[in-house]
Image (tube, rainbow, N blue to C red; front, side, top):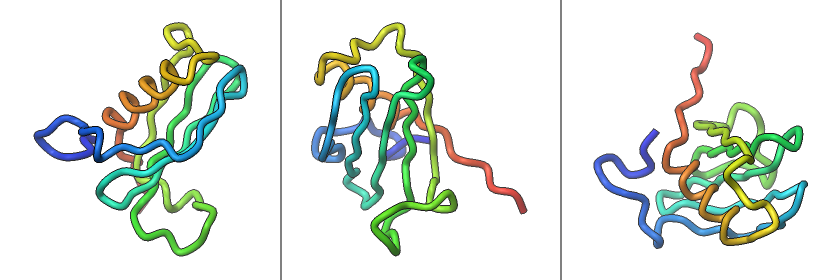
Length: 103
């Protein structure tokens, strides 16, 4: 999924609102198009990113609110460095794949 079709993710379009680092790194943020996202380390091996639809009805997104996901291995991410985690999240959000919904 491309965040803005035909363009790169701009700094104005991507904001991390909260970030914690370390082996349990996690956080959340928003995109310029009204969508929000969250990220967390899973199984001490992967950085998992979920992008949510715009205009959520409540403060906590539900499974049906997920419109795209991305997973990155932690081998190339320094989870103790905020800049490294933020860059990995930014890149993962830009390359997130749409979630397939059952019909």
